[in-house]
Image (cartoon, rainbow over all chains, first blue to last red):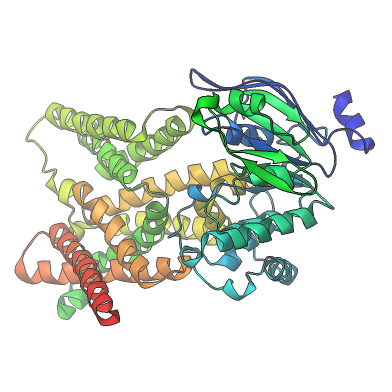
Length: 266
Length: 276
């Protein structure tokens, strides 16, 4: 694959390229004709209604589901071939919080070697690395706690630490602030901003405030890609995306304001 | 019972069978509970009945028939679950009833007197033979080895299969291995408590263990211990009162679980009242 070989050599080539992607669940088409291109250390925010295919797009990029049509390249190779370069923070709702596992054990699974090594034990470096990441996320004191005792924010930080234990070059987050209080949310965005100096970030969120103030580029997804570019939300895009008026964030520099939309304005 | 245990070969066999069955159902039961595959395990057990019937009909040891039905059934159910959007409870229901129906047909076609199949339906731990023990021992060894050697991987797989798969862990192998382990455990449990009662020994020990510890490893150990207590206790009681061992074992396990659930509710209520 000539494209793949070239992509590895040039810094300017896209780290993620999605071309004309379509994904079906049975007879239902979830994604259609999606194009996406990401440069190194980009910070992409993906918004869209529930069932709009946001998580499906992430899973296609992670190589977790079969794609119907189109191509996905992660660092110039198939998602499967380069998945070790990607850290993933799934939606919190996907987890069984009663599972008998501690915070430290979850973070350590990010250090698990690929394949299946018989009688594998985590090395001292693995443990130090996990400790360091938990400290960085501010959850070190919780390391021996069973995960069901964590708050929403603490849970997300644990998942973030696990994703970072992989040493990823690209971080993919699925609604990391969905059940998180304002304080923890700000901490998570602050951490992401810092991480973004080194790694590329893709963030799926319903949090339009985050789109307005944290991301560098934005994609609006509802089965099709309705917009991809600068993080400028305008009524036309939002209207098409959600099919109804929503609270919009208008960009004013240096301040941001929320503009109310009455129902009559439709 | 102690004299009987020392004196009679069949009591010694029952003791060792209890121990090995407890090890298997403790280890596999905890995983089954975390993966929410209990009904699937019940389905595999009942599918195995087809194999038992076939054994009678064709004249080979029925437990081998159970083995050759349970293992492919488990792998096929796994395969269909993975590849299609078919609802797994429907799939399990189909296997469950078709397996039973096949067993009944085979038994009906068997010439001569109809064989006594109740020992397979309700189990008879006192009927365990020397060669059964050897067979069980090898299966247990396999289960213990499969779980112990990939323990970190199992933990990651049970907690978050998707993340493990992105990590490059061979999730598919683990998944098929888990189905295989379930099938092997079910076959062994059929001897001890019987097809109809398999679910009790896969449920009760992990359920009680889950209430007592939040550590996967300890939970498995505790489930093994509990399973062993239930099996031995049930064996002792049934021997003294001349009752069906399988039924007594299950009633003991079930009673303990219900007591625990009730105790937990009362304790929580008291705790809340105290706090107020």
